Length: 482
Image 1 (cartoon, rainbow, N blue to C red):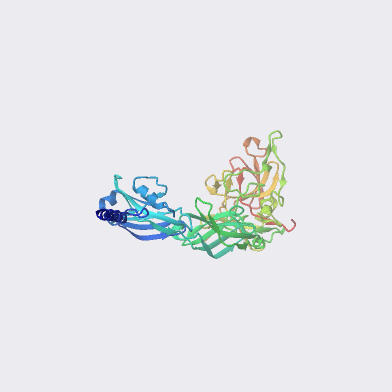
Image 2 (image 1 turned 90 degrees about the vertical axis):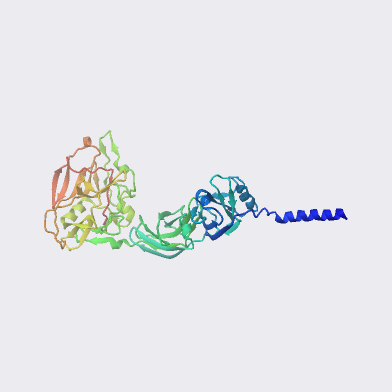
């Protein structure tokens, strides 16, 4: 009988000990209060407080967040860290913010959308003699499903303004994404087969100015959001627009030849924009360092350049290749006709010089901006001898070592408060200028200039020399006979 009582007592003791032992998935914990667990698609915000930590511990200790995708072994990994293992096999975030009163806030990014996670918050004392962890918590990230709403487009000849509203993506997640538009001439463009344009984000509104477009062309585009440092990209629905008809660029100044000029530079949508810059005989606008056309090839044996002649309307004509149809670069004779049939007045518009060429035949005006030129290194230059602003425009003519250049210098023309011309003295040049790369190769040390309606032979030395590795804007003409 005594043996049975003793056995019963021992069994009860064992059962009592088992009831007092903590299970593995509920480690011993400090009193932690979670005030916020806000999971988004790519990130989470956690706010909590260790209520019984001393002020000294909070000041000198370190908070950590331990987390991993939901796993039966998560409790073991967290407990392993508590016992001193700094590489427990889970993720560890230590860049949280310490709040007053033992508070702690963590913003963790790089999470997988639509995924379950386990986490706990830990504390380690300054001397690493004491570690605590909270009770295990769970959260699930949202699905990554941004929406693009209220798509709008304002298209012109060579550019378009795009905008849309972004929804379905939290503000915290937006900090870890890249936004943009992808555009192409085929349906459903992607980052692989379209052209990307970065956007400006403001209050969840995506806006972008798309440039380098071709006139009278249908384009397809899609908004996109890409998760940084991943291949995760989400596209919006396909949208479309068409650039403007080039007939809107035609400007008839009533010239004797019937030549129709464009009202703005190649690549520009308004008369005041500079547009794109081209080396002579190249058909792609330069954007940074580039090389000149092969047509500038110099033959050291003969001491001369190729005799190209006139590239107007050919595959070397930028205006013709970019605009198509009957558009082309102007010839030297057309530049001279333009100056001979117009009065010229300078204006300052938004801090930039422009010239107004007003037709003597029908009173219509053409605006020409002083857009400077660009060197092959991609540097824009707007001044002649760093004193006077400059405008330079290529024509299509070239013979051996010379080509026609429309060089604009500020005139001494003065205007009154109403913009009326008060001084007749102008100094604009349509130059047929030597273009050799080095002085020792010059055969002609002068340029034929068209000044105030007269051809004048001007000494080249000490005068602005325009090399073929300079790129200029182009002002196209429409040729009904092309």
